[in-house]
Image (tube, rainbow, N blue to C red; front, side, top):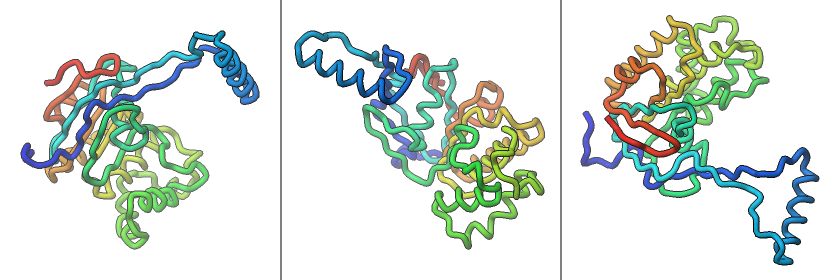
Length: 245
């Protein structure tokens, strides 16, 4: 049950992420340094009034509250700011503007291979990822067989991640992310790379998360999946929330 009187699990106020798109094409670090010194000299001489870059806001003025136990879907066209919003909440990106509060342990599935060391095996990456999430080796030992079984990777669990297909990486990522008992689960389109039977397993596990009052942020172009898992949906367009349902 969602208690609106409690502090939100996720709260964003006026969040924006800005990038600088440089107008000059630079092919080396030397060119970048020389160009920067040259521009500084012309500015000091009062001769340069043009900017060498344009500002691009991936998201801007995003206000959002998600309470414990709520499942929120984010939708919109490619480039609308969905993944950027998730990365801000996950702590992958630092916002340029605004304030945010995230209350609870976050587990994020945003990009394939994110957080994995390609030179380590799947098993080694489980221990590494679990330690980053704050689990002790003893706690990981109690979970590792369950994580491996859910991933269905079999003997491939002892093969370096660099040899995994995208589907195998998705299997391991989801298995690990959902077994460390997060308070907040963030899932991007990453599950789209898995096969149909595994996607069904993921849907069952996410349904279990909902029953245990976990908070879920979910991005998918699968309208049926969004409708199934999400209590409400916000729509993004050109980095801004246009409406919700």
